Amino acid sequence: MMLRKASIIARAKQTLGAEGNSGSTIKRNFSHMAKYHPDKRSPHIEQAKVLIEAYKLLTGRVKPLDCKLLERDDLVASPLPKGIKPVKLGVRHEDWFKETFYDFIKPE
Image (tube, rainbow, N blue to C red):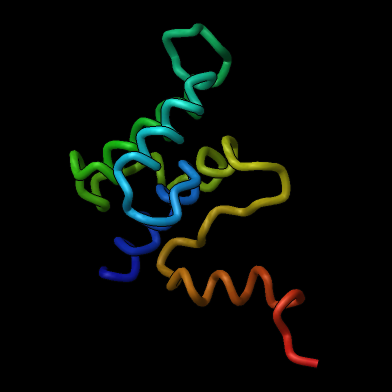
């Protein structure tokens, strides 16, 4: 259970581009991604919902296991830059990082 919570939190941080738990960084990145806001009548309503859920999670308004949108790979991947895959659920972030970037860090 703890592994799943940690991976959902890692997905929220990845979605908002927040490395640490700094409230100002989270708020700034969330505001920067306002192009996905549903009030702007954009076709990105689902992405906006994911960003809002990630923001609420990282600011402590919801619990990790209540975040159902952050569990969907397709929704989490949509606001990410092309080629970046979302953190796998139930996997430690460190293990996911090593698996994803092993080609860059493998010893010769």
